[in-house]
Amino acid sequence: MTPSRPLAETARRDTMLCSEIVSIAIDSFRASKVRFVLTALGMVIGTASLIVVVTIGLTGKQYVLGQIQGIGANMIYAYYQGGSNVSNGGNDYLTVEDVKAVQQQVPAIHAASPMLERNDRIAIGSGKERDILVLGVSPEYLTVRNLEILAGRFFDEGDAMAHAKAAVVTQQFAKNVYGSEDAAIDRSLKINGLPFTIIGTFRERVETFGQSEIAADTILIPYSVAREITGTDAVKQIFFSVTDAGEVPRATEMVRHVIQSRHRAGSVYRVENLTQLIQVASRTANALTLVLLSVSLIVLIVSGIGIMNIMLANVRTRIKEIGIRKAIGATRREILLQFLTEAVLISLAGGGVGTILGLAIPGNARRAAGSSGSVALRIALVFLLKSLEVFV
Image (tube, rainbow, N blue to C red; front, side, top):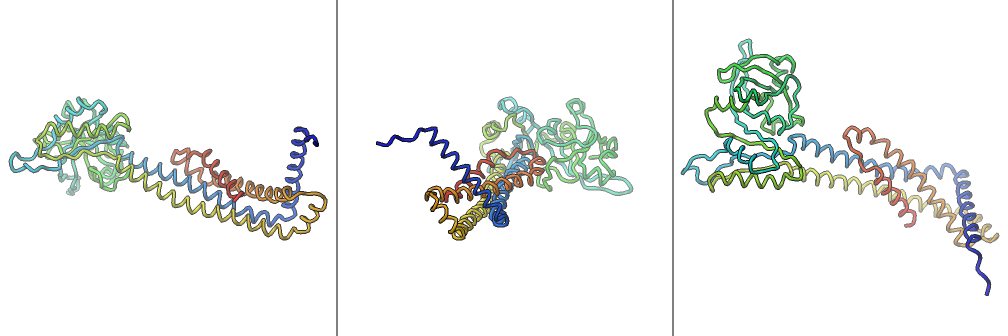
């Protein structure tokens, strides 16, 4: 029996064979630079578009979710919807006592604010008047609604306890009436005949286009003062903020139970949060990303097929070279490995350039949205897809 070759000799011969194949492939590329560039171009476009689409999808998703969460940090809101026994016992509105009960019985709640609403018409000087929306809220409303103070300050617990005639106005109201946010500070206006001093201007961190309780010309005043003006304990809405976003669904059910237990059985109260809206936005963003990703994958697959076609044509044009290599002892496996190596190098070259472009193009978008985008994972995915295409 013929003894087998030592393992070291076999490894050395295979290494020399691989290096020779790579060297021949590089020489082939140098001889046909235009063919090499055009073949790799499809992989460049496919890889770059794949990474850009994934990055844009993730960035857009995080941006949309951030915008929704900017409406209120882990916010829960409750309001009275009505009831079947209104004719028997009258309306069963929410009260400030409901706020206190929820804070005592729901541990996850860390901030809460009742809200009274009143429409008024005030004089703004020069014989002009303006319709406004007055909201009576507590100091914690600033936290619950995640508002941004642009000038001055928000009223605090001291103002609420002292029943101070302090007002905080929207950015649009300050600009329209006084010219700027800063110019509105320390100005006086009369609400229901009572003089109020503007101590701050604010805006919502996310533009809700009038779909929230805050309108363009909204003035916030302490709840204690609004209660005196309206002469009622009933509140239109109650806002709560939860310490942990994961506790929002559970806290919502607990708030609903506490409120319902304090009122008549036939009364209907809506206790809602932004979780459902966030889930809908997330599903929509994921669906859009999958659609765009499918298009990019098609481009990538087409580029892989293009490489296969070019290599097939390349084989036909190099029949003489293949014959010469067989004549000097090259095996079928070595010749097949030669062309396969060229395909791999084209794919890696095009994929490498495409990856660099794909990471560079949306870089600013990722930084603007504060998103890492799982770059390493996307790179691994791209090279995996390229490798699979080569062996199709």
